[in-house]
Image (tube, rainbow, N blue to C red; front, side):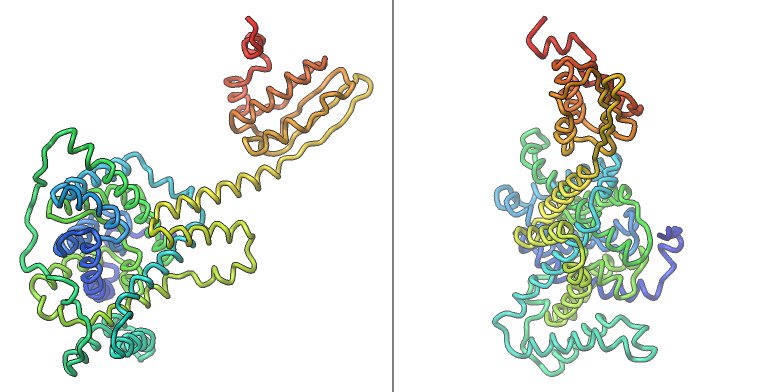
Length: 497
């Protein structure tokens, strides 16, 4: 993958970043309001948070072109805290969330993404695409035919406008959709739901606010569980989104820097009366598909969002929700990995189970972390099972010395340890047994225990046993935890002294 220079990240795509920033800012407004409602706070909390996080992350984030703001996944975790303790404690939890995320960045927890398989990422992407589409259904339920007509027209503009010579490539089609449908609704006077119906837009700029909560262990006990959950979910969604944007743009990102950046952005949000947020896959995809690639698009999305809601609220209120629904449906369609449907027929069943399980758990629970955890767990189990079957052994017999030689090849660990121990014929009438592990590797305590079990049992049957060919790593773990060559430990295990 390509690694962009700071200059390229900021000024390598100025026109595309400016236009994409406008589209994303417009799309952020109803999302931020909706997430505020989910969390049980005033709409301005989500709007201020989106402004702060997007603006700050543009400078300190590890992935250019990625959009971070208030999100639904984070909002769901705040509901109980807001209901039981109020907004001040939410702001305090947001600050602590930022501190925890900065700590995660310094601990280099971004490396954990290497344990997330491609299959889990695909399942995560497909689940989010489904959730994005499902989030639009309330705007398409129990409405007049005008809404369906406007949505269909919006989708038509989005997919057909790019085919117009020259102009189609200069202006992002989602921006054209929003502008055209707004003009139509205002001019014709169509009575449909608009952004103004979502909630009251703020009319002042955010100011510095320090949470009015006691600085005590009691406060920490209240907010820490929420902050820990917010930090974990925020980093997970940010890392996954960064991975997806990496693939879409064929560039690389710094996950540890992203963790620190998310933390700094959340601290800024908490100090401006906002709530915690993270990377948004939907808005990030909008940004990329609208031509945004650099940090300038992220910065403009945040700055323009604030300008629009504070200084252009009368105009923004007139944007029909149908236009934004059309844009989000486009995001849903573009986000879904359609090749994974074809893969159900050709890929191994274990791969399909991991992908589908991730999708079902995320969609069923709306918990991104739980879905990814399920996928990673299943992928690990399938991998362990597959690797365990790669271990096999060969037997040979030296008649002159009455020696049976067992030669093991492969990986010996918790899932193959029992097969290792069962490979021996303990009752065979031989004087000597040689266990050759020169082409095997012992990975864990279960493997060492299996070796101990085999050697001790063979010796109890009157055989001389020798283990040969241990590599340095296997020798280290066997010397540390093995007991078959330590008589005192064997006696202790048997109850002797």
